[in-house]
Length: 460
Image (cartoon, rainbow, N blue to C red; front, side, top):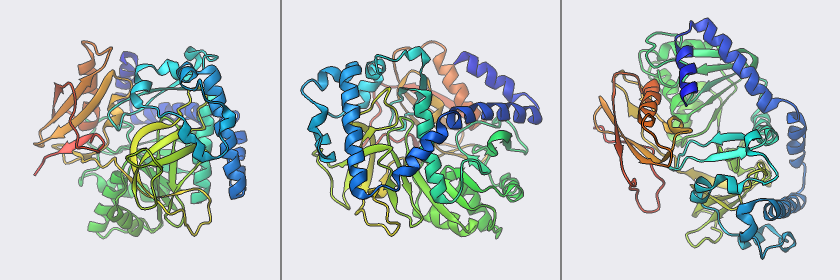
């Protein structure tokens, strides 16, 4: 963390033009990881899956499940004993997946390498740090090919939206592209090779929103990729000030937070385009996204997803259900019947688009509050702060504007400097005018049946 912190501090003090150069260079590197060698082959494969009939697609998934179970039993220590009495040939339909045991987050967190294919050298694998939206950050190991396949699924979805990964876009997410202490525009940086304009989501106050809107009108990106709360804040300001955003973009793609219907309605009204909401996970084991008719579809060739009731049985349409995932992307660290911690309301699988992908009525969870800073900025989704830190659970609580309490449950490896490093990461997002109080607890209480809420606001 120290090296990363040092590099970030250097970046924050560079002139804007040089920051753009560095971001563009990094974007070129990211492009190679996501869309380099073998990406187009992967994209062609996942695109071809859309042409399969319903019967062919179901058989494809059964074949994938058999292969995955066989691989896990033969080469993954965690599953070897657990699958001792299980043979791939036992799986004749997808319903047979219930023969397999469920996988808990705790098992991944405590022994991540036990879930890695023993033929792989962990030192040569990519490590993805999840953000811990359910309170438990994880380390996920994967190959470069798996990451490309994962982005092939997202690129296929962009095609369905009507854009491509090569098109220009504006991204408003969790990256700190502009230091929190910056008090005048520009609050955006450009990744030239990605055609990506990175907007800060930490400066969205009434004072600066007119500048955001002017920049959007100047860029006119093909699509906007944003947290719902961020793009809604822009749309709300434009609506309150009779400033139409029509014609700026072809589509708005949202993720990472719950998209509420009032938010969707206002964003679509102001931008005069459709909002496409999606739900995924850093573990690369689920992808649920909206089609042009507004239905949420489970992209089952990315992951076999079960919706289970409180008795661990398949839930019926209209019922609230737990999401259990079997990832088909990352075979280096197979997550089989993984309890990811989110819930949905199950759909009826009837959609005008004609897709045979199962439907979800709505995704439940990720319903956090936001932190209000003394400058008037509304900061949501702080879970990326804890990426890579030895923390079991965390929650941010605010009762007065001038302060925020951070409840932490320590994990093994939490050292003398960890607290300061976490506080510094928070300050980059919240600014230096708010007091950050770290409080250590053994457990963070939550309501029965509820996910851990990341942010709790008690402001009046």
